[in-house]
Length: 424
Image (tube, rainbow, N blue to C red):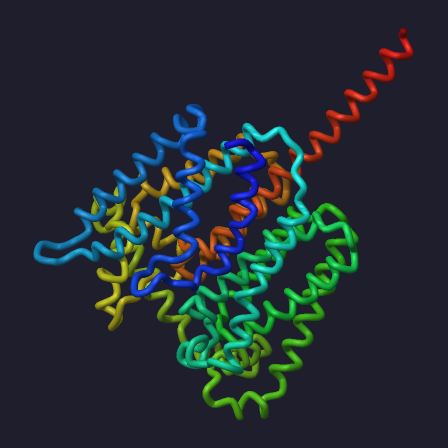
């Protein structure tokens, strides 16, 4: 497989990532998974030994750690959630595989790439889940609302908030490559409106804060132009004013009895403005208790500390204390609990391997930071519809840097050719 064939496969990744909700009934196997398996079969025969040598030890140690954790986490007589373990392991295997593919592309691809199709496919597919959620409120609310909160096809309002948060950094890279200023302005405004409405309707209070934090990281690291920084801040302010104006219309919100997401966001604004106690926000105390329970279980003994309790097991062990299958609303803490210090360290190492192959810039650093920021409000960031955009933006960033390098090399060679002719 040459690079043009590989790029054709990668180019369609966002389409499958946007169609992730197309479940192959009755399992949790998705269209994205079919794409992933085909891609892996095409790529594996072409992988260089150097990529395998770097990824294999850390990958094997990571999966060795989570296997020990699965056998370690249960008390005698308790049954582990084997299906949850296999599902979570498969999703992490996908992350590791895409990171390895990205490393290989960054090291071996010397050709310039026409990126415009990538940008448009990504913009369409990133907007699709947001548009689907909004359309669902009108046409099929029972499919997109969870307890009166907008969740789209993510099944969880916090996962929906995480998706919006994770879009900020990739969009900054994708939009930078679009030459037409008017298209960039329209895209920023459109995603700003869609994202603001999604956050308001989901009632995910934590993701208002985390989105603001991600936006700050992107402004500081991901954007060089001061004009672009000011423009993005201005758009954020406009979206904030529109949101607050909407929330100030309390009469409208009170009439929407079945739309709890709006009411939760309205209470957040009232707490920020000082007109209501933060105790009325609801789930903050429960989240702290879940977080502390997770940390206690992790530090309970040296086996838990080093190897964790097994992927997908934390809801089984922590949940009963809180009356259901729940775990800490923090992917970093959940990952540390389920994989232990050894597994967590190996996964971080695997994610950092492409750093040597990537062109390290502010935007690529902001992608990595924003991924972990978005994980601070949900345990679900191992799912492809959440990390897919980050990996894809890394791939586009690699192609952008290769393209610029190609231009510089071509100019240098042209200049050298002219000088040699002058010498003659």
